[in-house]
Length: 161
Image (cartoon, rainbow, N blue to C red; front, side, top):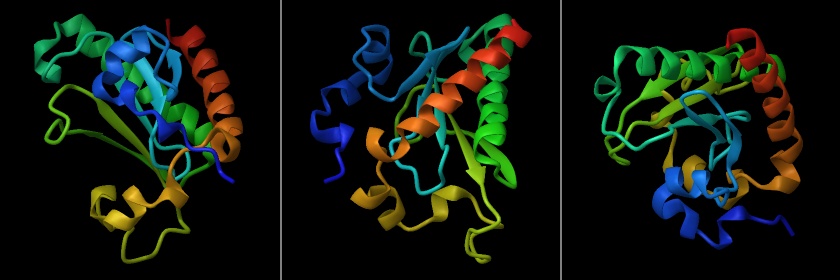
């Protein structure tokens, strides 16, 4: 049976605080501006999220140096995804509409996706893709990829910082 990290979801109540406490199981690594995390759902393998070190409402609340660090870290995650998952491209998204705090989504996009999906944002995939247990992250199924992403992000951070 596939083990699901979401059985105890207390850490989801505040993903940033739980990352600082070492209780967020989705964290890949600590970065200069925050935390690289594997996405809860993996119907697009390698989907990640960048959480800031401190909760804020939007990118504009950060000073210029913090913004630069955050956007650089977002791009490092994307580059690691390219190296590990070999997507056709990477999409970067910052919304804050549902979870009203700064966080960036880093989505690999693949040539094997249905042709009718390719020109549209990932958010237009059906809720089945987002919520279906089959696509949820599990260490069993996705742990090796998470570890490879960690290794690549570390290498990129060494070059960038």
